[in-house]
Length: 314
Image (cartoon, rainbow, N blue to C red; front, side):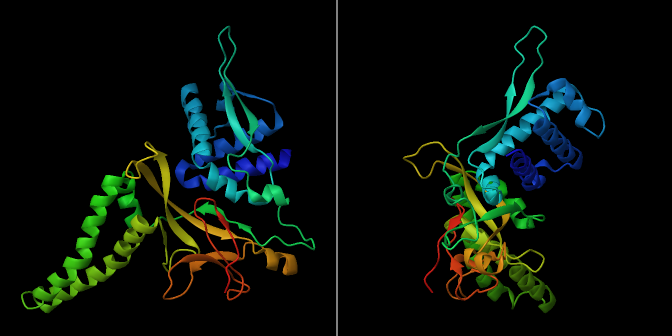
């Protein structure tokens, strides 16, 4: 259990690399996790001993720990999916115990809590070579090293429903008006300028199309030569203010690489992480999981909210 606890939290820090965005703070988190795994508690005044960068105040170190606790809670589903193979019965969390005066320092400790939605790998004890093979799969996520520029620019516009609607309206205008405008301008502009405008339109076409899919389907494949296979952008629910109003949902954009282990190929060949996300076909753009070893027969659905999949009938 101790090794699994360390692995879970270490994998969490790896997943949160882009959110942390600071190598010194990342190293600080790893050192604190190691210390917490060896001792029952880590007192706040001790935090400075685990930071290797430029010296900060005690309050700053405390803020770093508060941020880690917040990120572990915010991305618990993605972190849980990334740690699926650890088969933990409960989720390790870092908690804060406030000193309470009389010279007692605030300290941090690792506790465990039940999963909000018990993952299926807990019930099946993970992927094991047994005579009975579970064909359901658990997807894992890891952060994308380089989020596409257009997603960085439009991330804030996806926060609220009204903002998404206005933004989608302007993107649709771009799709409709731009080709018509280019048709009129061909007679009015020099060929060189007109050609540059046409090239600009085609450069923006794919980003605009992905934004439309993200707004309407809540998920889009990031199919780019410089991006890994299985990279997707997900419009994730951040906050539901009114459960009766679908227009009152706050969302955030999450760019991740998704993979899974094909239970059939794991049982037969011990192949891991062979399932990656792709379009179902050229004409059916549904995003599914395909096994690299047998992409024709070993296909699975992809549920972006549960991070699970079931076999597809081909």
